[in-house]
Amino acid sequence: MIYTNQKIDKIFNYKTYSNKKKIDAGLEMIAIMRANLGTDSTKQEKEQVIKTSRYIFKHINKIDIDLGKTLLRHIDK
Image (cartoon, rainbow, N blue to C red; front, top):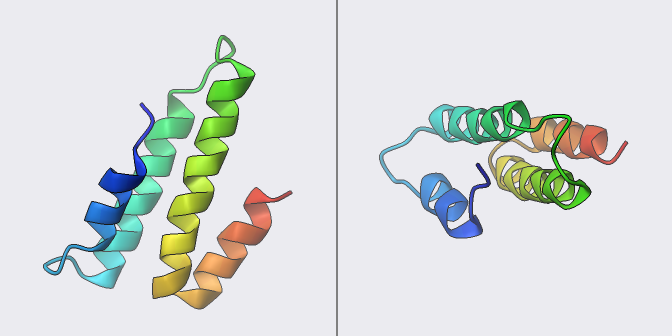
């Protein structure tokens, strides 16, 4: 399952979610996407997961700069 940018934006813009809950929801989305990747996944699917993960990490970076920078640094490796 690949999440759309609109869905990600919607979650990170919830007024009723605390910052911790927003970060947890973002990391959960990444975990689900990565868990659904398998040996039969195409290169395009893998690249899309990385692209979406980077988008989520940028949202996390706006909330928690230290965590966001760490996550963005590790995804680029």
